Length: 287
Image (cartoon, rainbow, N blue to C red):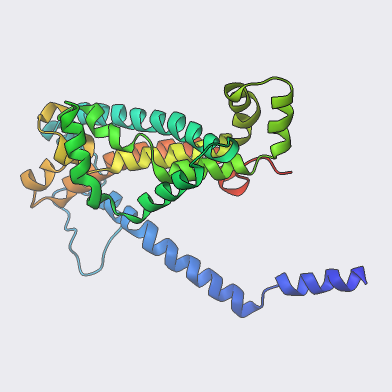
């Protein structure tokens, strides 16, 4: 009987040749859609001024690769200063989400208090609204706090993301309540239970929200454009817009600027990818 069930399960999971072909075709289409623009930008950024990039047959391999476009970008705009501003904003956003989302997620998952369902409903309601619908209210709030034209004002709205709070709540919920109750019986308070009992089980999810928070802060364009006016405080994504106005006829430099802004994301993901996939697949302790 057990053998028949095993054979039935194997037959259920076994794919036919046609299904395998369709799966790989879909993967190839997704790969082309996601990777091809990146490869094209990289290729364009390495092409010299004498090489035509608008040929009838696109050429992804430059004839004479050069890093001169990156040098010209650094000469045209203070890339290092803008990158440092973006790093400061990203650190504030990531740190705020790690601390704020962790505490809020733990409170919603493990602590019992009046109005917890109302708070959950409010969090879910905020996810329905697009960011553009609240951007005026955010600007008025930041201005009333005197944080306009500051990097803290850029980072403040994203320092606790509602989606990150829900992700942390889901991670804490997956931890068995027996561990929480045992620690409570031993006399541990809420902070001790959070740090010593629950936090080690959600390190994978912390990596997930860290990557999401970093990418969101690093790639954000609209909010820094609204808040910042002093050129010295511009973030990298906003500062690189000068390339479009100064070098409109030279897409090679625009592509080089795009690659410069993309490199830090690749580095962060490469460092945290092991924890990222662990957080996505496991979430927390498996009982």
